[in-house]
Image 1: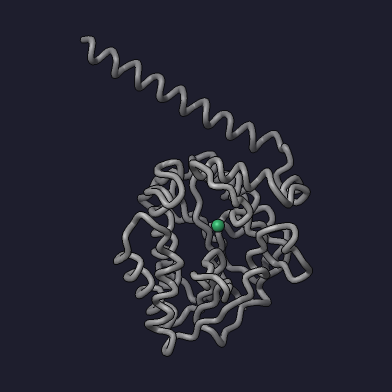
Image 2 (image 1 turned 90 degrees about the horizontal axis):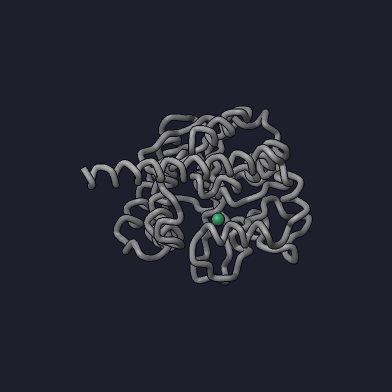
Length: 276
Ligand SMILES: [Mn+2]
C-alpha cells in the first residue's frame, strides 16, 4: 500500500529539516512512498533547492512566511505554521488517494514506521494516556477517506475557536476526539514508539526520535530551543546525518550574511530618503 508523507518547514527549522529528511530517506522503504510533501512556510530558495534534491519530494507553496522567532514558543510564527499543518493535511488528502503520514520536522527517523500504519483506523497518532493532552500530534496518520477528512475539518474548526496565545493543536484534537470519536476511528500509538524524547527512553521499539521533547529548559525563542535540542542527547545520530558537513553550515552562513547585507542596504536607502 502506497502512502504519502508531509512535513512543514521554515528557515528557523532548516537544520531540523536536514536531519529529518536525511534520516527519513536513509531509513524507510521509499518504494512504499508516493510523495514526500514539504510544506513551505518560509524556506529560502537555496533551502528549497536542497529539499528538491531528495527523491519523491514535492514542495507545497503557501502564503505563510513564518519565523519562529516571531513571538517565540506559541507565538505568531509558530501558530501560523501549525495552522498550515492541518490546512495542508486536508488539502493533500483531497488531491491524493493514499493515506497521509504527517511528521514533525524536529524528528529523526530510526526505523521504518510503515508497519505501524493500520487501515482499520481513520486517524492514528502518538498517544500518552497519562498526559493532560493525551494525543501528541508529532506523528499523525490519516487514511484517505470521508471520515478522516470530516475529522480534520472539525479539528480545524475547534482550533480556530480557541485563543491564539496557547498551544491549540493538541487540545483541539482531543476535543475533536470527544465530539467525533463515535463516528471516526481514532487509534493511539504508544508515544515512545514514534516520539522518543530522550536517550533513556530509546529502545528497540523506537521508530522516531522527537528532539523537541528533549529540551526541558524554557528558552526565549525557538532558535534557542533548536540549538538546545540539537546539542543534547543523540549526538552520534545527529553527527551521522549532519556532522559538520561544510555545505549546510556554509549555506546557513551565506544566508545570514546575505540577509544582513540586504537589511543594511535597505537601512541605507531609508536613511537617504529621510535626508532628501
Ligand atoms: Mn515537535
